Length: 63
Image (tube, rainbow, N blue to C red; front, side, top):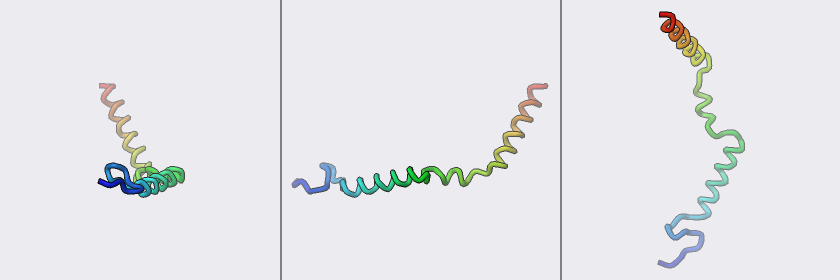
């Protein structure tokens, strides 16, 4: 098999990988990594669930 420029032995396109890495680095630097998880979190609901869990824990420990 003749070696092709910009390809690894496995056939990976080196330029394409470098471009994807650069885009990934830019997204991380801009704080975009993982923001979809934060956007889906309802803080009030989490606080309410935590309060209910604490109340149940206190109720169970007093028995």
